[in-house]
Length: 427
Ligand code: IMO
Ligand code: MG
Image (cartoon, rainbow, N blue to C red):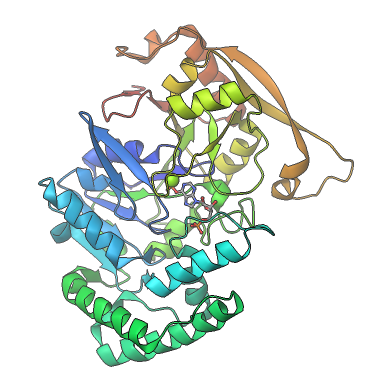
């Protein structure tokens, strides 16, 4: 009853972290339910920067319990580093952390395979992945030879599984012209995982953990990573991540049904669009000066890889799809301060098509669409210092009502800067 989902509605990087952080204040449990350390979630608290990759950002609220659920792919090196980094700042993490034993582990072998594949296809069309081993790890899960966290508790099982994994990966590496893993590499990975087993043993929980939390009345925040357009099934395939990132992923990953599922679903929408990696981007801004200005003002560089993000105008056609698909009940609109500094801005409300041969699947048509725009002038607008929604500048109200009318969902939160406090909530 009391649970909330926070979901990205575009190609990731919608500034979800801050929304999750703010909402987690009154929550008992925060859960990461998909993806891995391909996510890059940044929060500023009084000027201090925190970057999360695999831990839920709700971790910054010291009273929350932290859960990593089954459909995540987990690099234990990254996780341990993240824990130690945050703990060095005085916040306890590990004693609050629970991890589903059935979660898939990302081995160093998978990271190397991801890189090898990206490199091999560079000229003929790679995906532009984060090279964190995400794709290979989800492949292993589907092919049923993945290593799961629970496997670390029995060294003989681990040894056998690791050998099989290395054998499978070596066949791929060979075809990409990359040296295979040796028995020394295998031993090094085994030893590292055994060390991790000791460190993480107490964090392991069974797959009914979230169900039981819910039954005991705990308030749960389901914190999405990536965004709906990167969803493996409904996104801009093949330029997507390797797991669903829409609402349904919550249920599958946490092992819950409709009665436990969150009814309040907050869709995070950035006031303009960005995307990293390759793939279609209908509202990409071709005017170099505006593009650069948005990127610089919005610090649009990947938190995981440092890659510059491509920038585009808000695309209501795609958002209508992702809002409906996720069952979004309210919108958190982020980075409005960046758009205000641009002045005259565009919003895509319709697609025309360059060809008469329009594919019946929207995501397949994205390469051939011609966006149709409305314009709004946000010059001289600012949210800084405003305490009540009704006092917002008229142009911002117009921008918001344009979005609300089109998407038929209310905007209830407006984020106007990177700091935790730079947020206006509609009362
Ligand atoms: P957050 O949670 C933006 C993109 C990659 C690439 C594609 C596949 O910070 O919003 P992968 O490494 O997952 O196999 O890469 O998905 N991608 C993201 N883009 N933000 C993310 O997460 C992303 N996670 C994956 O850039 O295009
Ligand atoms: Mg990101």
